[in-house]
Structure formats: C-alpha cells, structure tokens
Image (cartoon, rainbow, N blue to C red; front, side, top):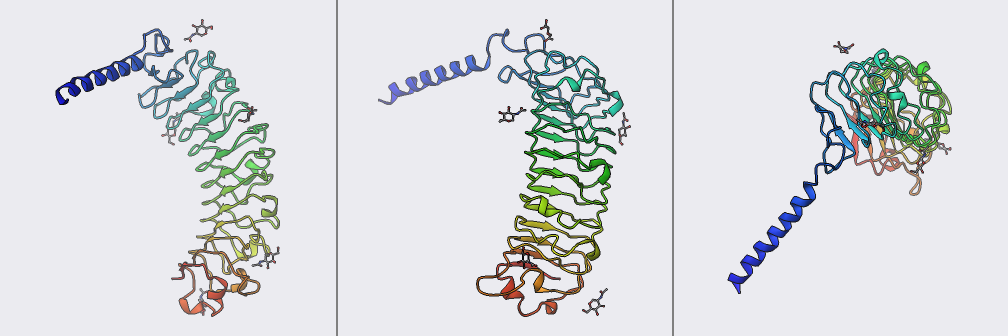
Length: 340
Ligand SMILES: *[C@@H]1O[C@H](CO)[C@@H](O)[C@H](O)[C@H]1NC(C)=O
Ligand SMILES: *[C@@H]1O[C@H](CO)[C@@H](O)[C@H](O)[C@H]1NC(C)=O
Ligand SMILES: *[C@@H]1O[C@H](CO)[C@@H](O)[C@H](O)[C@H]1NC(C)=O
Ligand SMILES: *[C@@H]1O[C@H](CO)[C@@H](O)[C@H](O)[C@H]1NC(C)=O
Ligand SMILES: *[C@@H]1O[C@H](CO)[C@@H](O)[C@H](O)[C@H]1NC(C)=O
C-alpha cells in the first residue's frame, strides 16, 4: 500500500499548489495594479481595492486610481494635499495619513473635502492647526491625535450620525473651542480629549457616550449634573488635572452608570461620593487625608455595600490606620485596596 499512497499524496499536493498558483497569480489585467496604480505605491492583486503607499519617503499624494477604497499613506514626508488627487475615488472609505507633516493651509479645496463617503480618517501626528474633515455622513472613526489643533468649529462633525469614536488627544484645544462640537452625534461612544488645554469638560455632549477620556488637562471643576446628562457613561478618566474639592458639587460622580472613575493626580482632599455600580476608583496622588466610608456607602448592611473592586489611594496623606473599621463591611469586594 505504502508505495502507492506516496505518489498519490504528491499528486494531491501538486494539485493543491496548482490551485494556489492560480488563485494568487491572476491575469495581469485584474485590478488597478495593472498600470494605473502609482509607480511608488502597491495595489495588491489579492486586495485590489487597497493602495499601499506607506513608509516610502513620499512628499506628495499621487493620483488615486478608480476602484480604490482604502488608501494607506502613513509614515511619509507629505506636507500638502493637492486638489484633484481623489477625483476618481470620491467613494473612498478609508484614508490613513498618520505621521506626515501636513499643515491645514496646504490642503487644497477639491481634495479631502470631496470624500463624502469616507468612513475612517486617521491623520494623527501631522501639523494641522484646524481639523480637515470631509462632510461625510458615513464617518465612523476620526483620529487627529498629536497635531496642533487650536480650533474645532462646531460644524466640523455635524450630521455624522454613525460616528462612534473621536480621538483628539495631544492637541492645543480649549474647552471653548470644543463647545457644541459633539452635539447630535447620536452614535458617539468614545471621545478622547486628553492632553489638551481644557479648563472644563466640553458642553453639549451626546447622551450615547460610553467613554470620556480627559486626562492631562487643566480641569479644576465638574459642573453639577454634568454626568446626569450622560446616562450611558461607564468610563470617565480625568487624571492629571487640577480638580479640587471646591470644584466638585455634592454627588457629581454619584451616577449609576459609572464603572470606572480615574481622578488620580489631582488636588482632592476628600474622597467624592461615588455611584452604586462603580468598580474601579483611582485616587492615587491627591491630598486625601480622611477615609470616609459615606463616600461609598450611605448605610451599611448585608444587602447594601459598595461594588468597588479596585481602589487606589496611595500617594495621599493616608495610612492603613486611617481606615475606619466599617471599611471592610462597606467595601467587601475591594480585593485591590492600595493605601500606601
Ligand atoms: C479616472 O477616471 C476617468 C474617467 O472615468 C478615466 O478615464 C481614467 O482612466 C481614470 N484614471 C485613473 C488613473 O483611474
Ligand atoms: C511639523 O512639525 C514638526 C514638529 O513640530 C516640525 O519639525 C516640522 O518642521 C513641521 N513641518 C511643517 C511642514 O510645518
Ligand atoms: C449608518 O450606518 C447604517 C448601518 O450600517 C447604514 O445603514 C446607514 O446608511 C449609515 N448612515 C450613513 C449616513 O451613512
Ligand atoms: C447616591 O445617590 C443616591 C440617590 O440617587 C443615594 O441614595 C445614595 O446614598 C448616594 N450615594 C452616596 C455615596 O452618596
Ligand atoms: C496628614 O494627616 C495628619 C494626620 O491625619 C495631619 O496631622 C496632617 O496635618 C496631614 N497633612 C496634610 C499635609 O494634610
């Protein structure tokens, strides 16, 4: 049997290889790679709607040929976007431009603004001073991290009903520059505005928001009722700000939606009251000098206790002996309780 089976196996294998060859080397007429793909880019035959021009020291964006839906131009030396380069692909879905040196005034009219079907725009680590976002109602994800944005007109994102994530960290945005910018974005679930120049949280946030990241700003207060307008908010991060007790109205964080609250690296002296469903509370490196169980539990009983699992209080003016004896009854789930 053996001598017979071996050639059969070889035959099956070579057939499989043949099949493989056929699949991956189609005739050269297929896809934009056949001629119209810019010489400096690659439009793979097995993914004919993608155009890869990343990491090639390019200075300008080449004309994008018909049929392309996804364009990768990250890690180049692009400083400008000329009118017309997207004329054949106004139905483009993704445009990736991270790590270039594009300035806002070098983006000509008749370039990005034509992409009215765009779903994803990544233009992080460039030199933009104002956003350049096409008026695409199909937009789902926008990343403009690490630019020099100082303004963000309220109309920039208007009508983008499918927009779910907006990343604007590491810019120069003030609270006023963002006021109203997110109004009406009924699908928005994630907003990252950390590492900006915010003195307060932006107003007019959509009620769909699940995650709000505002670390590394200059925020000293949270308006009363701010979180009551965000009934879906589960993750709120405000580390490295200037929060003081006087800037936090009673109960401002006592909302039932919150699961995680990061207030580390601020100037708080007291532990603020938190909501019944909170699981993770970060308060390290503040000036807290009193552990008050009423911040977590208004009353303590076998059926009424805090759900907090992680509680960080290190880097404050507290020691293990500052813990009142009711603490373990109020916080029975706090396996990770770091005091000092
Ligand atoms: C652009 O579109 C025009 C009109 O459909 C077509 O003639 C031309 O070949 C296209 N150019 C490229 C590079 O796709
Ligand atoms: C973009 O910003 C970088 C770093 O800030 C700077 O070195 C570069 O010269 C800027 N490029 C342009 C075209 O402005
Ligand atoms: C939003 O997404 C839905 C579901 O994917 C889609 O049917 C709808 O056309 C999108 N809206 C826009 C304006 O693109
Ligand atoms: C939070 O608010 C609820 C009422 O909405 C109240 O019953 C509860 O005691 C408050 N929790 C704290 C820790 O103050
Ligand atoms: C730290 O706590 C101790 C005792 O609770 C108190 O005497 C001291 O004044 C506190 N220090 C500061 C800087 O709040």
